[in-house]
Amino acid sequence: MTETTDTIDVSGYSFEKAVAELESIVARLERGDVALDESIAIYERGEALKKHCEKLLNAAENRIEKIRLDRAGKVQGVEALDGE
Image 1 (cartoon, one colour):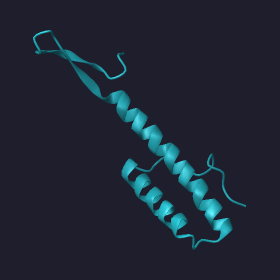
Image 2 (cartoon, helix red, strand yellow):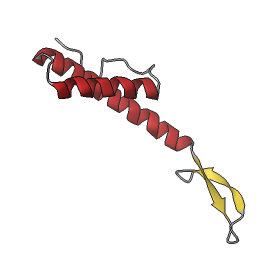
Image 3 (cartoon, rainbow, N blue to C red):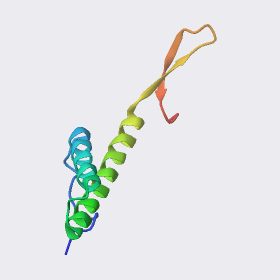
């Protein structure tokens, strides 16, 4: 039996490592030379990696600050991307 995406632990992966593994999984699945059971298992792992990447990207977006300019175009300050 395969692990579900909830039990596949990729939480310690960096974004780059997760993307690299996800690309490897996609390449293997596209080649079509993987047995059905293994295809299902690596697809589930790919889903877990995708969700982890989305989580990391959302966290990064929340940390990005946007520069506020006054009417003259001079920097007035910064604020969180989401306006908080």
